[in-house]
Length: 316
Image (cartoon, rainbow, N blue to C red; front, side):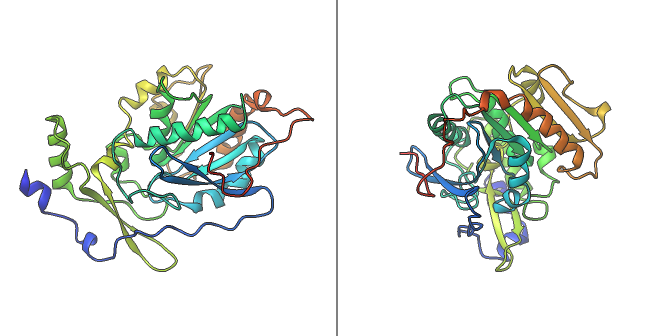
């Protein structure tokens, strides 16, 4: 086990400096976009880019590995206009502008704890407005895991776009800001064996490496086994089928291979393998799915929409 944990790291891990800097935020555009911050119970601030709409409803978008402002810049204003809801692109702990250790977590439920704090603040600011979770690629795991919990502030809808919910799906996939991960296979398998024995002392050791593209050059991001494991919900497809809230699933596979049936609660769209996740068909499906929440999110003429002032709202 010592050999497995201590040797065999990919050469990529030693070629570049480790990325420990926060990524500069995209500029605030007019009055429809602003940065927000949410202070977690352990005093770590998480940052988000919010696209504002005259609505009490909010879609919280969770990114995949290595993502930051790119996803917001590509889809933020379009999703706001299409849905008529506020759209909040949250940088998960240790990603983008958010604070926290890069590429690792303190415990498996840390993403869920952070989401609970964010959802609680959103519901405080916009009372009774629906909060929807939208998970993209590896961000689908934390979104699904949170939606299945019963002891947290509830969300009213869940959308999973091109979800990567199993280790087998994450291994070969490209990330939002770089090529596929390079894996320290010997260490990962050793850690999996130790976890089955109830031993978690080595969970913070890195098992995956990504050469990220940055304006100032390429840097290596390291991901611990705990950080990877936190993206993998238990029995994901059974969990989706058991959820009572409305679920939208958009994945690239043939309809015959769909693992979630289309029901009154579940809207399922299967895209051809090489199709963009943001195809015209996906946008039409997203529009149809968000329409069901419009009435609950509507603002009366005399009610002012919530806008954080100053731009950075700590939620205190």
